[in-house]
Image (cartoon, rainbow, N blue to C red; front, side, top):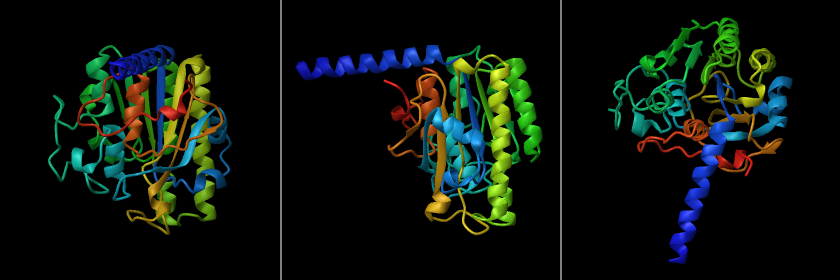
Length: 296
């Protein structure tokens, strides 16, 4: 009996914590940087991102799923599960190569956008993406604002900043195609790669500034991560340079200047977003919220 009461109290505390967290946070921004290896997080000159790290929680050792390629990992990040569940298995998957374990009314494996729409019908959501492959990995009918940036990161950033200032969405996902292009064209761990990360940092800074200009800084969580890293001029393999990715989160209720020790897999991102929003995650998801990042 004592064990049952303790378990009930623990569950009640978790539920109350989710409710309190979701009340504090009114806006969430996810920034995804294609091809940003975790190894580069500390080495790169990225003052805006490092300010988020200082004001939040972070790790350079989160992991993508295998293969360490784009579509399979963006799908996993948005869909809260790995390729054996959602079915997207290749770098450029447009449809699942393995039938999805389950589908929503939108015809896709459940992703964060459909979870928001089903449980918070009035919530305004937005997605701005640079790589057109993202367009196959989310439920367009569940999103209020959809912008295909056609591989123009500066356009995507300026557009997302304008949307944040004018519309103040509940959830915004900004996908940037760099530093992946530079990694492929010139190589990872090169001066050009690190120079490109400085430009990525400037784009992150524009989003942070947009949040301030919109007057919502005290109620906004920003999460920055990637799909995979890279080695040489490619990725898709099993080296840590390819598999490890940065994961940074900052905002109300987040532990400050804290390096996360818990294991994070990219599908934990969707689970963390759902937890922040006070949403029930689908049974088919395998991700877990990164609770170590939050204040008790």
